Image (tube, rainbow, N blue to C red; front, side):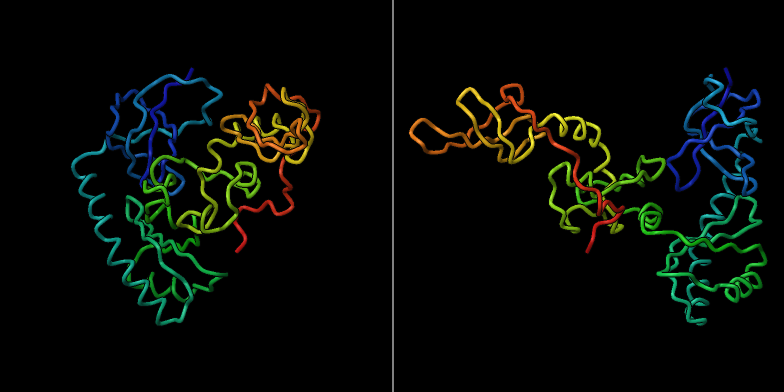
Length: 286
C-alpha cells in the first residue's frame, strides 16, 4: 500500500496523487507541489490515505509544503493579473491580424511562465506575438491552442438542462461520445437537440449508454414478426426504458390492433443490432 494525498488544480476536476511526506492534510487545504510545469498551488481533494500500489504512478512527487499566508497572497496576485494579461494579448493579436480567440491566461505559481489559451479555426503563426509578449511581461510565454470543449470547460456555462456544464463541475476527462449513442437512445439527430454549448455532442449521452446498449440488443427488431398472447404481429417501436414493444396484431375479424407488450411476453428470433456507425463521429453533422 502507498500513502497518498489527492490534489486538484485550478480549472481541473482530475485528482492527482502526491506523496504527503508525513504531513497531515485536510480536505480544502492549500498546498505547494512540484509538477512538470514547475511549482504549482493546488487544493487537497483527498486527505492522506492508503491506496493500492497499482493505483499509483511511481515515483510519486512530494508535496513541498502546506500553503502559507504568503502563498495565498501570491496566488491572489497571479489570479488578479490574468485580466490585464488577456487585455494585452488581445490588443497585440489584433495589431498583428491573427485570427485567434483568447480564452484565458494563467501564471504558473512562481511566475516563471505565463500561459495563454486560445481557439482558432486552423494553425496560427504566433512567433512574432510571443516575442512581443516576452518583451512586455519579462517571463517565458507559452501559447496553447485548445478546442471547443476545453473552451466551455474553462469559461463555464449552463448546459441545455439548466445546470452548469458537467465538464466544469465533475468530469475529470472528456470521454468519446458518438452519434451511435444518440441513435441507440432514440433521440432526434438534430444537432441543436443533442449538442452542448461547445457545439459538440452532449457528454451526458455517455452516462446511460451501457444500459441502453445492453437492453437494445434484447429488444425485438422493429419491423420483425413476433408472437404474442393475442397472435402474431409486427413490431412498430420499442421503449428501452420500460422494456416494452408496440406491436401491430392481426385480430380475429381481420383488422389490426396496436398493443403494448412487455419484453418477456414476446417470442421472436429477430433481435436488434446496433445502429450503423458509418457516420459515427464525435460531432453531429450540420
